Image 1 (tube, helix red, strand yellow):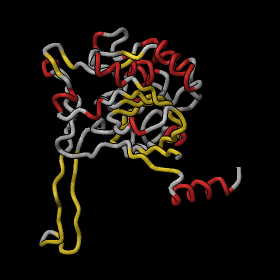
Image 2 (cartoon, protein in one colour):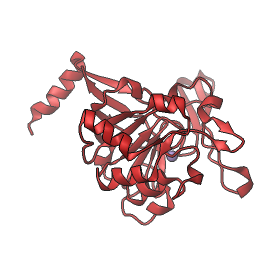
Image 3 (cartoon, helix red, strand yellow):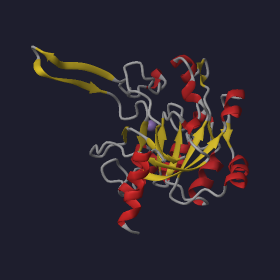
Image 4 (cartoon, helix red, strand yellow):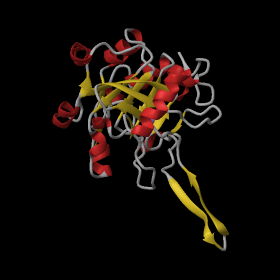
Length: 262
Ligand code: MN
């Protein structure tokens, strides 16, 4: 590889032949966060909260800045393997120790937006992936699989969370599909548009929360709360998604970018 590869990349961006698509939702107090049952005594993830420190005023005449706080898994965010109990004993499994090559990879974008619109509990199957591969080619090792549902286009938090009396109804994965992507395709991880990488009904799956359980159990990663997946080609995009380097972090809000040609 020569220096000209990087020069071509930067010239391509400057000249517009390579476009940068922002897959990130804006972080704001109304950003929806995962809601766990309240009757179990489990801890609560803070929603995004922001407070102005100064804005060119008597709190700081020449500068503007804010304090903010939120849970690590807020908005568009990265899931590190340490997030799940099945991934707790791996090495280099947190935001500060994950090898940095996990933060850049090719993307395969599986479009199940029609299926998800017809059935909010749609689960991606191996057959669905194989039919996609027959059209677009095999998913590369060390790539990200992005699950396009168009869920990020929901107009309200209510529709986005889709909470019913029996819990949330949002799309996700069949357990066998997650296993297939790890064992047969050796992916870095999967990315979704929903609030978490698993289906709303994941507590009823076997294993529970199969994407978290199996992906993190195999020291793989996740991206949740993505947007603009409809602007990506099925193949060929490069994803850039480095989480904040929080010591022993289980994840963090992340600016996720995709490079695409054309
Ligand atoms: Mn998460």
